[in-house]
Amino acid sequence: MGLLDLEKHFAFYGAYHSNPINVAIHIVFVWPILFTALIILYFTPPLFSPSQTLLNLLHPVLIFNLGFFFTVFYALFYAALDVKAGSFVAFLTFLSWVSSSFVANSLGFDLAWKIVLAAQVFCWTGQFIGHGVFEKRAPALLDNLAQAFLMAPFFVVLEILQSSIGYEPYPGFETKVKARIDANIKEWQDKKQKKLS
View 1 (cartoon, rainbow, N blue to C red):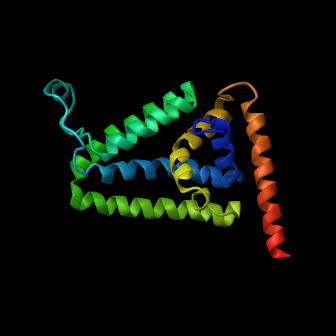
View 2 (cartoon, one colour; view 1 turned 60 degrees about the vertical axis):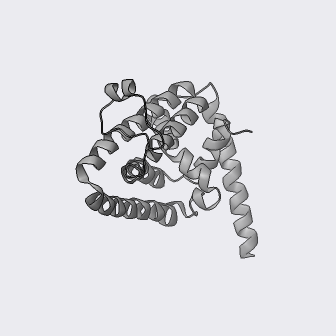
C-alpha cells in the first residue's frame, strides 16, 4: 500500500472514471493538459547548466528547467510502477517534453501563454463536464490532488493498453483492480445515500 502500489493508484483513479464516456473524454484531454503545461514550463529558468559535452549532444532548445524536472520525475515514477507500460509512458512523457520545448521556442512566451491558457481551459472544462454529466462524481483531484495529477497520464495509457491489447502488468491485475474500484464506488454511493437521508 505504498507509493509504488500500482493496484491502489489505478483503483483510486478508476473509481472516479468508470463511465465509458468520461474515460474517453479523459483519454482525449489528459495528454494535451500535460503537453501544454510543459510548454509554459519551458519558460522557467534553467535549474542547472549542463557540461559543454552534454550541450554539444543536445539541441539548444532543450533546457534543463522545471519542465525537464517534472518530466524526469514523472518518467521515473511511471517506470517504477510498471516496467513495460511505465517505460512506454515515460518515453511518451519525454517525447512530450522534447516536442513541447520546440513548440514553445517557436511560439515565444507572448503567444505561448495565450495558447496554453485556451487549451487548459478547454481541456479542463471537457473533463469537468465528463465528471458532472456522465460520471456524476466529482473529479479525483478534489480528494487527492497530487495522485490525480501524477496518475492521469499513466492511467489513460494503461486504460488504452488494457482495452486494445488486453495488457496487464501482472496476471489478475484487472480483476483485482475491478474489485477495488467496485468497492470504492459502493462506499462512495453509501456515503452519498447517508447524506441524502
